[in-house]
Amino acid sequence: MAEPTVLDCKGLKCPLPVLKARKAMKALAAGAVLRVLATDPGAVGDFQHFCQVTGNRLLAHRSDDGVLIFDIAKGE
Image 1 (cartoon, rainbow, N blue to C red):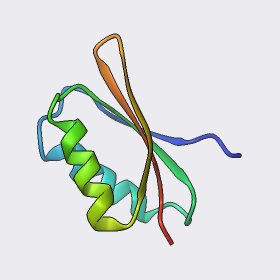
Image 2 (image 1 turned 120 degrees about the vertical axis):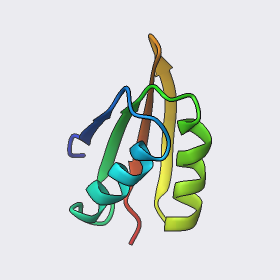
Image 3 (image 1 turned 180 degrees about the horizontal axis):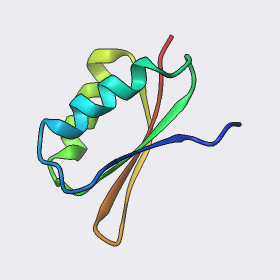
Image 4 (image 1 turned 30 degrees about the vertical axis):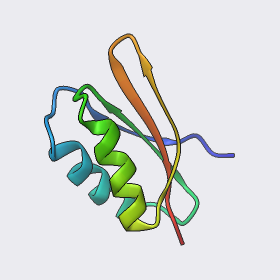
C-alpha cells in the first residue's frame, strides 16, 4: 500500500481543515489515503460528517500529543 498523502492543517480553525482536505482529495486517485493533521477539537465531528456526505471513508482517527490525525480513503 502506498504511503498516505499528508495535509498539515495544524493551527487552522473550522472550516479550513475540511475545505483544504476537500481540495486535496480531488487530486488523489480512488482508494488513495489522505492523512490530515489538525489541532481544532471540532475537526473530529467535521471529518466524520465530511466523509458521510462525500463518499470518502474515514479509516482511522487518533490523537498524538495534541495533534488529531485522520486517515481518509478517497471514494470511487
